[in-house]
Amino acid sequence: MDKLKIIGNGPLEGDISISGAKNAALPILASTLLSPEPVTLRNVPHLRDITTTLDLMGRFGSRFELSDNMSLVADNRDITELRAPYELVKTMRASILFLGPLLTRFGEAEVSLPGGCAIGSRPVNLHIEGLKAMGAHIDIDEGYIKARASRLRGARFVFDVVSVTGTENLMMAAALADGVTVLENAAREPEISDLADCLNAMGARVTGAGSDTVTIRGVDSLHAAEHRVIPDRIESGTFLVAAAATAGRVRIRNTAPQFLDAVLQKLADTGAHLETGSDWIELDMRGRRPRAVGLTTAPYPAFPTDMQAQFVALNAIADGTATVKETIFENRFMHVQELQRMGADIELQGNTAIVRGVDKLHGAPVMATDLRASACLVIAGLAADGETLIDRIYHLDRGYERIEEKLAQLGARIQRVPAAAKAAGGRAVNH
Ligand code: EPZ
Image 1 (cartoon, rainbow, N blue to C red):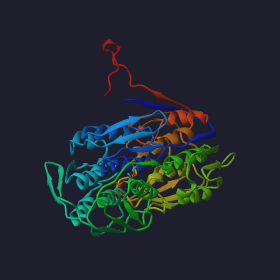
Image 2: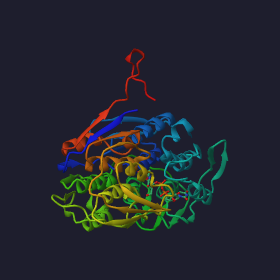
Image 3: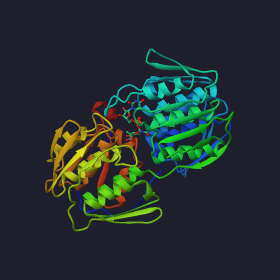
Image 4: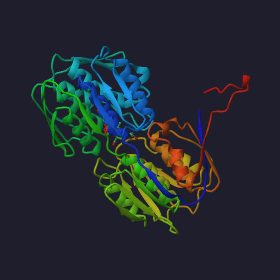
């Protein structure tokens, strides 16, 4: 397995471009299955999760024309397979997003239950209950969700927990259902609105996306469309936190400041100077140490859980003590023990981390456990003295496009270290 070697090298300086949003591109790719005509997508990020999605859709019969400027055409005219197998679903839980589109367009679908995940149990009961409310017959058999419906019918469904992909799955299922579907207590993330925009471009009739009540008027079929994926707000936030943690000055381009209000507020609270334009954000922390900032994660527009680990890294070297509370996932502090190996002073009390800032972290060998924990360790390595070697960085590649290239552009001393070649014939053996 590749590793990332980082040598703390002082402030990050310069500007980088943000890629398309992973968590918008994934549901939007799934939504192209709803149309028998080609759908053109632009600003699709080059990420492992995207490659996994294209591989899985290829098994269904999807055909793709990829161009080198992050655009692709998805052609789903000849879908012959309606089953998402465990060996692929286990590598990417977002595969659950194929359930709604396949079921509503073809009347049946089989998707492996995603199984456990490092950050929490992450059940999909709401996806299943919502589809049942729309008339689907669903069996759970041999680890697979087996769904059938001659035609789904519109229904009113109340989410008892706000679910991002749950909202997305039911929006897609409702697009071709007979009648009107109303989703209450729906997720409000920008990625939901982006999916709605793409569905409407394909001829769907979705209103209210971005609010907690989304209404979908079913139609008989969808058609060809073009759509540009929104910028990745979590990649944006990650780079801004890295700039703050190294007392640097960084401008991020091709982003969307309006999606980051809660994060920008917290960064301002650390003492960072922030400037924003229509599609750029500049953070300046030169010559200053961040102040500790407490936070509580919650559904959008509140502070995002996907930025929690990054802020724990920032607080680890901040002036003061911060209380960080995680309310979305039950096990999303695995980065803490790795940070402690680097000298961080953090105490865990259930779903709360008490972070006492230290003057400096020191580099150490650490292990990535999930996507955003990996980003946290990169930030800690950039701010630390000495060398940090991060193992299992395949987690990082799922959600960050060419992160070491982008950070090197900002002056970071960072390189990807290929898995050590085994003695036998010098062949590189991946563990
Ligand atoms: C999405 O995951 C994101 N993934 C996650 O980003 C993100 O952390 C999460 O939303 C929360 O914002 C994608 O969009 C592909 P949820 P999702 O359903 O949809 C419970 C990353 O780093 N729940 O909103 O799987 C669940 O256990 C990833 O990019 C149920 O109880 O999350 C959790 O406690 C990590 N039953 C809460 O809801 C269900 O049927 C929120 O989960 C569904 C969810």
